[in-house]
Structures are given as C-alpha cells and as structure tokens.
Length: 395
Ligand SMILES: Cc1ncc(COP(=O)(O)O)c(C=O)c1O
Image 1 (cartoon, rainbow, N blue to C red):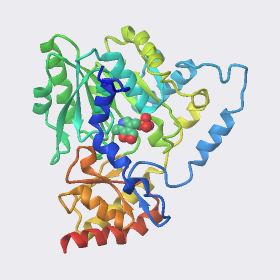
Image 2: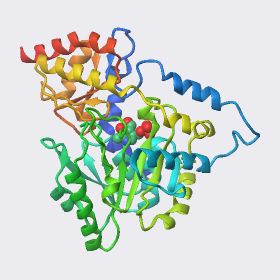
Image 3: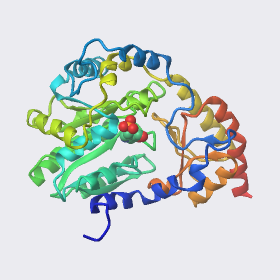
Image 4: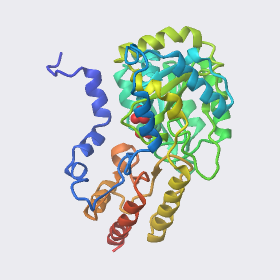
C-alpha cells in the first residue's frame, strides 16, 4: 500500500492520459463556452438541437406498456433481434442474436471485450494516434497497452510494425475504422493482409489473438465510399458499435458488441461476456433505449451536410495556408499545426475565440483536431480566427 486511496491500476490509467486530463482542467478548456462568440471545435458534441425523430422515439417509448417496462433489462431478445436485422440489412451478414450484447455505447462494448479477454499482464495492441481511452481501459483491466504508430503518409499502421509488436503475451488488437482522429477508412488490401498476419501470428504464439474492431463511425462516411469491417477478414473478431455518433446523442448511452458469426469461440464466450457486463457496472443500456432501438436504428444525422461542412472547412483552411488531408469519414479534421508547438498554437487559436484539441494531449504532436459537428454559423464565425492565428505564426 502506498497510502493513495486510488488503486494502482487506476492511477496508472490516469497517468496514461495525464496530458489530456490536464488539458480538460485547463482554464482554456473550462472557459471555452463562457463567451457566446467562442467557437468550440474540441469534441464531437452536438452544437444544434437533437434530431426530431430521436426526441419522438424517446417520448413514444417512455410510455410503459406493461409492469416490467422499466424492470431490470439484460440483452433483451427483441433488442438483439433488432440489431441482428440491422446488421443483416446493412452488411449482408447474419449475426446470431445470442452473440449480440447491448452496451452503454462503444465505451461499454470496449470495456466488456477488454475485461472479458485480458488476464493480468496480457498485452493489447492499439494504433496511435488513438481514441483517448484505449490505453487507460487496457491498463484498468490489468493489461499492458502496446502502441503501434500510424504511418502519417498512408494513415495506416505498417503491417511490419504490427508484426513486431506481437509477443507471446498478445491477447488482442484494437482497430478503429473509420479512424478517430485521422478520418481514414482502412483499405481492403490492409485489412486482408492484417487478417492473414493475425492467423499466422496466432498460430506461432499458440493462441488466438482477438480483434476488437471499433466501428463507432462506420455510418459516417463521405464521398460514397464503402466502409469495410475488419471483422470480415478475420474470424476471431468482436464488432464494437455506438449509436452516439450516428445520432449525435453521446449522452444517451447505447451501442453493442457483436461476435462474428465465424468466431469459433463464440458459444464459449457468451456467458463470460454477460458476466463481464455485470461486473463492469451493469454495462447494459437503460430500458427506454432498448425499447426504442428499432426506431433509433433508422435515424441518422445528415451525412451529406456533414460532408459539406468538411469540404467548406478543408477549402477555407487550405486557402489560409493550413496543411490538411481530406478525411474519408468521422467528425474530425486533423490539420498540421503551423507552429510545431501545437499546444501553443491551440492557445493562440483560443485567443481568437476558436477552441480546438491540441494534438500533443492525445498522441498526435504537431497536429490539432477540429470537430465538424460545429454548426455552419459557428464555422463561418471561426474563419477570421483561424486566419489571424496562422498569419501571426507566419509573421
Ligand atoms: C473511436 C471511438 N471509440 C469509442 C468512442 C466512445 O463512444 P461512445 O461515447 O458513444 O461510447 C469514441 C467517442 O468519441 C470514439 O471516437
């Protein structure tokens, strides 16, 4: 015992995101909405009223139809069937409803998959720059996070780097496509070769390496592109999905974890996954959201409009001299910081009333991230600030 009231693994998880936590506690972040003129591009939060269909579904399904309406809910057969039908229509793959676990968003699905799989000291590979909570979640499950860097020219990790990261202790790899923060849709060539590599390495180390496929943004795709699920190319796969992105309602927690129909271990995993949902704090969505799931599944934010915002911002920022690629999906733009010190540059933007996520706080030094969930009006208002900030750096 070292006298700290916090368990070591949680303290370690905190250390893993110390720079992000410091940023979230900074005056710059905390005061970003003090002035109505401020433009907040930091996170993928809504900046406009929720979808009307979402509000209607909440109202409709909050009226109880029987005494058990708000009783304890598990992975309700009807919700499981709704997800299975959705996946079949969307991806042409028939999932067994018994292999679908309703979760509190992708956070819940990731926590359940990681906690169900990882023994103390097991390694879990993830790709950096990552979504902020992969490493903390692995550490909190007593695992060891192993980082593989994205090649920022191709926006994919190299297969060689993944191969080198595998050890006898590797239990799982987490992939995220389309990717937060790069907006990259992993290509078929990469996914096929990765599937082959994982088969080969699993054989070599004597146990299956599980693939946890975070597909939180798989319905937020631009330019008519097609999302390819990594789960199609490797049988030992868990699919992670959240409705929070497609509906832009991240405060209403619903998503799912689905075991690939080809996964040989799926029957053996079922009871353990339910147990993990329980012991990770009932990682099951509220009754109301489960009742509403069929209606929610039909809804989406306006993706063509999001694409218009992406195009407008990319063109405007490039016109000012920013360097940035065009994301293929997700909510994010990832420009290079004109000042190599991206934290200083984000502060400079803040002085212009524009708030973006400095890359260094989330394993992407030299970049900053913009969330295009901002409204058109906010985007328009922000442009002068983006221009003034880069001009000052150039001067
Ligand atoms: C890649 C990725 N995975 C998981 C999550 C968590 O999603 P949710 O809050 O809907 O559970 C997010 C949220 O930002 C994300 O970007």
